[in-house]
Image (cartoon, rainbow, N blue to C red):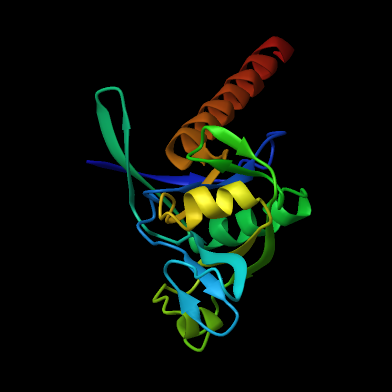
Amino acid sequence: MKIVELILDEDQMFSGVQAISIVEYPAIESDFVALKKEQEIKLAEVKGEKRVLMGPALIPNKTIYRRNGEEEYYIYFSRDTVRKASELFLSEGNQNNSTLEHSYELNGLSVVESWIVESDQDKSKAYGFDVPLGTWMVSMKVYNDDVWSEFVKEGKVKGFSIEGYFADKVNMATQQKQEAEAMELLDWLMSQMEE
């Protein structure tokens, strides 16, 4: 089965992560945790809730199954792309953009912390995560009472899933090759016209 690396296309107006969705089945196969004041918990307790969800947004080199009609394939993001995507997400001011299951825009959720796991002593370990170096971790504050009580506390959402625009490295390489060939042909035609 084909494995495709997704990259940021810095020439495009829309590139990178535009929103983070809370979903029941995250494609990266890693759930978030809901935090209370003193420890991590899987399902939050009413007393002492922080209403913060913490988990990975992107895991580098993790293959993610995709299906487009009859075509089945895997995608993945390199460590470099994960880092650039996390930086672009914040620099573009997207920390308040969130959705439910990629279908419904949500208000009252905000990414309040974002970091890249850079060592084996990363704080993600203290919350029970065993993720590779280069993982993009986020903490999302849930101000929306309905989302907290009806989806988080009921266990209807379990993790994060990114929404964004990325280029296919294979297609980008093909496009760049075609552009280079076109330039060579143009140069050759120009030289023929000069003669």
